[in-house]
Image (cartoon, rainbow, N blue to C red; front, side, top):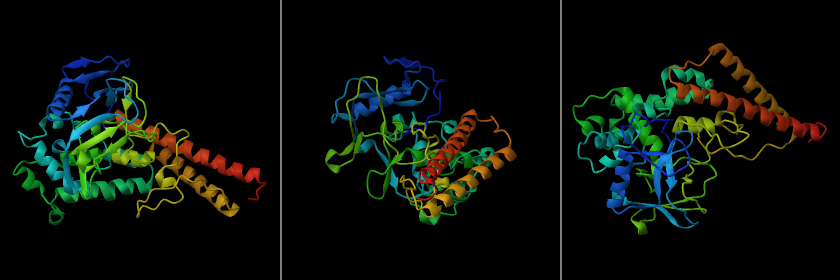
Length: 360
């Protein structure tokens, strides 16, 4: 799954050229060795690993593929799974694999992003939290993601866990930032393939998100593994994507470290949606408000107030620091999307009133 930041493997010593048109097309030695390992262990695939024109790592076809054909098959014994518990409570099992010299998953572990290449609410940089510029978003990061991560690191949730940190890695000392990184990897790279389990699947977790995606993920027991089947005809060199779900940009940022740059105009952030409730986490409907008139007018006032408070807050905060350019760019993008989404919805609602002479 996509959490590889721009140009993240440019320091690798060996690049193997691919026959793609993008100027950032390459595969590293470790990535090729992982593909070889998957093949030797009974996996099948018509894809390889490369980069998009923006330098983002992803999965691309190596031949023309017809709709309904198998794209990827990963045997069950190459899948890493933990119980479906909060990521911080499952992370010690991933820690154990990372600290085991002869882990069965070593070829896979070598291609996982490094500590500076992962971003979620769990390891969101402290200096940037206030630049989320929203009380609900800041509360999610500080009061949910980071709070649970810290309490687990300090041993306060040991009674809820199958394996504690000391049980997983013995006397090895790790820092809280490193634990946040491991939790972020587990949180952002897992699939819900089976009941009560979260699974990290080699190669599949390198597929980037596209909300429009129609490729099919199948983990039926009959296959003894995980399959991706083409949902449409794909040309050689075309990127293979999956959808991470119907998530808005603020949700994608905190769970996966990127924004929805496909939907245009952008959708309202989850925290700006009229049905947003931080307590239930339910999916927010995309059905637009169309009436009655008093509800439309109330929604216009609500959105105007959101936009006014947002702009005032940004003005008080001042410029976003460039300590981490990737995070700074993401926040700039989030701010611009928020403006555009609110203004677009305001224009739509005001158009409704005008079209009906103020009488819906």
